[in-house]
Length: 84
Image (cartoon, rainbow, N blue to C red; front, side, top):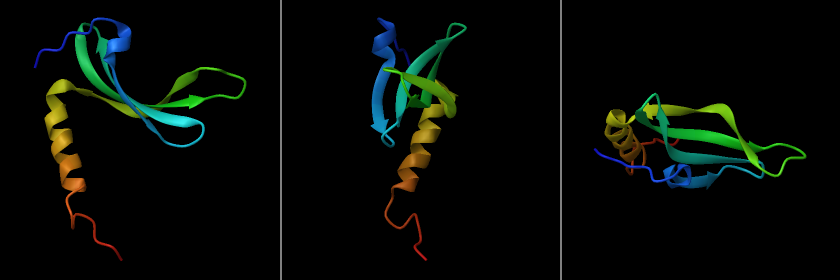
C-alpha cells in the first residue's frame, strides 16, 4: 500500500463527534519515516478555541488496518451482538 501525504492537513480522513466537548479523529500519521493510522480522541478545553489530542486512542501499522477492518465488519454484522 503506497500513500503519499501532500501536506499535514491531507492526513486527516474524518471526524466522528463523540459529545459536546470531544470528537474522534481518524488520520494518517508519520513517525520516524513510517506511516500509521491514528484514531485519537480530541477535546475542547475550557477557554480554548482549538481542540487538543488526548492520550485516549490507538495508533496502528498500516499492515494491521485490514485485520482491524475485518473485526469492525464482524462487529456490525447482524446477529453479532446478542441482546439480553
